[in-house]
Image (cartoon, rainbow, N blue to C red; front, top):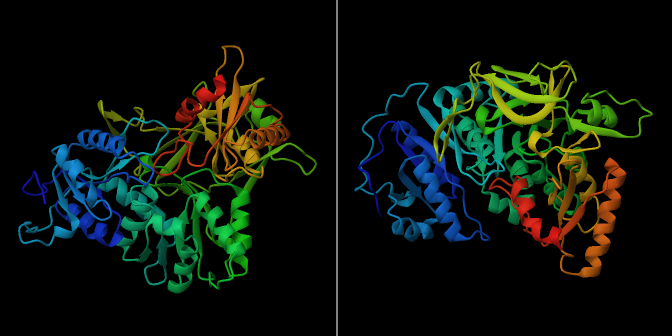
Length: 508
């Protein structure tokens, strides 16, 4: 056991690296009772290069000025790496050791004191932490409790979400801990090795609340459709889908596969959120299921207007409606010239409210997240439709060709339909070949990678699907082996890194 500090003081940053939620939970409570802030470190996987992970982690610990690392299984084997770099740590299993001085009394903190330093999962490789205060945390949790109508006497939460992600840490640890809700929690590794465990836990514990990114529901849908096991999913009333683009087809596959197990179609709640707002931005209404907005593709891409499609329209785009803003959060949409957009006009989404963080911590020091009027630039493009938030995609990822604004998700959905392409492992990235005209490449993961003829046929089919979907031909289609696409620790595509990853293929 190694420690470089006699104890946690008010304002100290404490980092945690552990897998077992039962060990993490009391450690988080202890840090907060001592007046410190918590940072959940990104966890290395079996594919992680430990030397690179250690270097990145040292940068993060320096950025947040961590006073202590709490280390637990299955990562206690990494203690020598911390020793080599002189980083102070305690083993979670040793916290009841007599040598560890207990807390005399809870430390009083202010609303503006830091509660969480949430490492972001953006597309940049540069580390960055969102500074979430106790005031931010209380405001967002209160808003989510109200919108989801959470009741401790009725609700049971079931989750496999990672605690280094805001949806897991805030939504499925801090919130039930503060509210006194029953929580059934396993690790992401347990879910990924046995996806039906999720359904089993909902069935066994009569779970009413759960959440996951879109890929989780798609994976569970495939397993439910083929299993002969019996589950009772009739208790589920709130299944939040968020943290990555929501695929209506995946949602329908989930509700269809779950129907024979009593899953209510109305339980699906499409949501919008980000670490910069602590967690939630908007929730679709409970009890109505997924609602989509079907709009004319030409109006969207050429005039940046989300015109509802008529029955005879052939070329359409479909977006999930993400509900109205949570209480205490304001949403506005701005045109490129900075003027507010009208109803159903596509622009840049900005947010303001008591849940919104005021500051990032970066390797270059703190920086503000807000403009002088308190607005946060999300980087997302979208529109407002009868009070609902609709997100089209990231502004920096938009592909502009022939005066049309094409969102990568439309290309990726089409490519993912090709047999042999791994679902959820497709990336469309723009290629700035010259100043006059953009092009784009599609990278797909497939088990057929390495077989020249199979790759040729796969590329041909991907091109055909994409042309049918968006009327544009990719400049290149790159077939990669499984696990090749660069992603953040929470599973989001790192598009800039994807471009770098496929650069050698493009030269060929």
